[in-house]
View: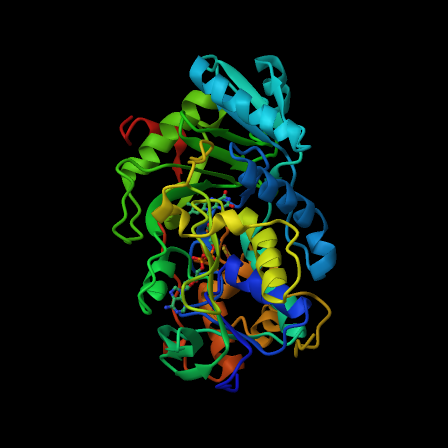
Amino acid sequence: MEWKNTADVVVIGGGILGVSTAYYLAKNGMKNVTLIEKGTICGGSTGRCGAGIRAQWGTEMNCRLGVAALDTFEQLSDELGMDVGLNQGGYLLVAYSDKEMETLGAGMKLQNSLGIQSRNISLAEARQICPGLAADDAVGFFFHARDGHADPFLTTFAYLEKAKTLGVTPYRFTECTGISVKDGTVTGVETNRGHIDAPIVINCAGAYAQDIAKMVGVNIHTWGERHEIMITEPVAPGVCPCMLMSFSGNYYIQQRPHGSIICGMSPEGHPADYQLKDTWQFVEAMSKILVHLLPRTKGIRVVRQWSGLYDMTPDAQPIIGETDIKNFYHSTGYSGHGFMLAPVAGKILAQHIMGKKPDIDFSMLDYRRFDRGEHIRESNVV
Amino acid sequence: MTGTHEQNEPIYVCRCEEITLDEIREWIDRGYDTLDELKRVLRVGMGPCQGRGCQDILLREISKRTGKPIVNVPQSTVRPPVKPVKIGLLAKGGEE
Ligand SMILES: Cc1cc2nc3c(=O)[nH]c(=O)nc-3n(C[C@H](O)[C@H](O)[C@H](O)COP(=O)(O)OP(=O)(O)OC[C@H]3O[C@@H](n4cnc5c(N)ncnc54)[C@H](O)[C@@H]3O)c2cc1C
Ligand code: FES
């Protein structure tokens, strides 16, 4: 692809956030959007994620973003002209203590007040939704039928293909090595392939976004944390048709349309060493959970395990907006739920940059909230 | 579609995921010219054999269509376990 050394906007990062943001900018009329990715598209966290989508959240902002994400995903294949593999089997949340019932119950009330139809259900109903579920040690269950998952690769590529038709230029194997600033305003980016002049730069570098921000002395308080995940051989459908998830039980498990079961858990010690290691400890711990919760998985074979980075913030809610450097924006810190929020996040940031009123006011997602100590932590995360 | 072979019979390159040569050529031509990206968009190499049956053909096809020597086409990552293992066995720490 021919190298262009000027652009109206440069987006850094070829994950779902960068690609969707580039798409919505072009859709809203921005000309000459260039996207740079140091590796291949979807090679970062996006291509390694569980790709679950839900509106069952514990903070109002996450609920608003979550339900808007569902609305967007439900018409996304049509809008982009390519199937994104959306599957709405619902999320079944499992509570193991009275205290957790209380937290999830409060979350449900908040969700219901925002039009999200999550429900408290019995073990019997949970077993109708997820046949073969043991969970005798659980205290209660919550279910929201519109939740589900999509294919992270197809979603990203669908955005990319559509974005290309709207004039977005993606450059792979192009690493951002510096941000140029003049009089407190961004003027472009340095890359391993040369300079690009641009009056607007957006940092969507995921778990590496803080390194980009640091290039111009901005501290956005994000970091990367390693999470592991594994997938089984395909088996007949019906083993785990919903996303089965527990915050205290520390797991998420879901069967894909092609029959494989994908599952993960939060790692011990929250490793932030940026190594994409695969450990046998994870496979053993995850297998123990599976056998206990869904005994019929015993005979199913694990075919692959891998790891990826969560893009963390101190309150597990994203940071979206401009920095102290004018026209230098970021959209990151999705803390393990950036896949599902990307369609909404891309849209509202693009609307803001184009001078339109964003569908959702995201001013509270300003990264300076951490300096001000104003943040409230999201409870519903694995 | 830019397939060059004349038969109407589809040629399956990845038998596990049932992906044809025509599909692979179509996506290489759209710029998905690394093993990783073809894997992500078409699921080639993600089947039960984990690419043992199709990876070499894919590499050759990418090299042919992009004019890059095979050694310059990036290899894909091998992910454990190398052989599929039953969950019941893994839950016991691998001991029977
Ligand atoms: C195991 C696991 C399970 C998950 N499960 C879910 C889930 O169920 N639901 C959900 O919504 N989310 C989930 N997530 C989180 C989700 O994957 C991320 O929040 C999301 O993918 C973030 O997207 P991104 O585009 O910001 O980051 P990425 O996909 O990581 O993209 C950032 C890109 O920036 C590039 N980059 C970095 N530095 C530079 C540079 N200097 N120059 C150029 N490019 C650069 C990287 O190469 C990368 O491709 C999960 C994550 C993991 C690891
Ligand atoms: S032949 Fe392609 S994965 Fe088995």
